[in-house]
Amino acid sequence: MKIIEKLTAKSRDNFGNPSPVIAFLGDSVTQGCFEIYRDGALLRTVFDTENGYVEKTKQILRMLYPETSVSVINAGINGGSAQNGLLRLERDVLCHDPDLVVVCFGLNDCNDDSVEAADYKASLKAIFAAIHAAGKEVIFMTPNMMNTYLPHTVTDDYAKHLGQLFAKRQTSGYFDGFIAAAREACVEEGVPVCDCYKRWCEMYAQGVDTTALLSNGLNHPTREMHALFAWELVHTMFDN
Image 1 (cartoon, rainbow, N blue to C red):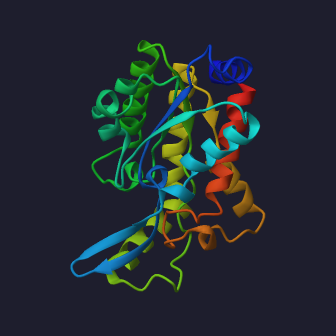
Image 2 (image 1 turned 60 degrees about the vertical axis):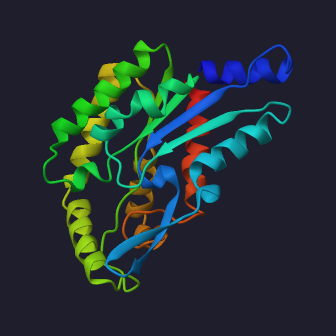
């Protein structure tokens, strides 16, 4: 990818080349959300962006190119979906003139009863087309799996309701249909896929308790699992 060419050029001539910019457009996982807790009438989340995959990706690239600076824009928003990601693409991402845009949606899309897989696919295709029209590279990152059962660590009544819903949509194949639609959109728009969902499914098939790898027991990966996203993303940058 051109982002790797720009990192290489920067490392060889630090003064003569600008710092590459990578923007991340996504939801709560992208933003860096982890545990959830009750605050009166509200169910809140713990924000810890320093331990999210956006920062971990930046750290890996700095390790690989120690003489190179790289800038990142975290445009992840808790509760975000492909539809509202499209609406804020220009404001939150393209206005920063990034070299590469990493897009990751799906967790909230599949749990919105007003959104079908076809709607999700259409929003993703519109995002990809707009990024390409702006002359930028784009990678789509598939999300992690949701919980497959309701863990005992989830005690809040509303969180239990969400956990039961998420588990049903994860184990019934409903969420798989959204991921398939996203992969189709990527093929049709010529977008490389960083397929983290595939990795999670492989682990699950081999007996790994993937629900135990969720910090909130529902849909937010643990801090340690964010490293998987970061490394898979860097591999995708090198392989395309």
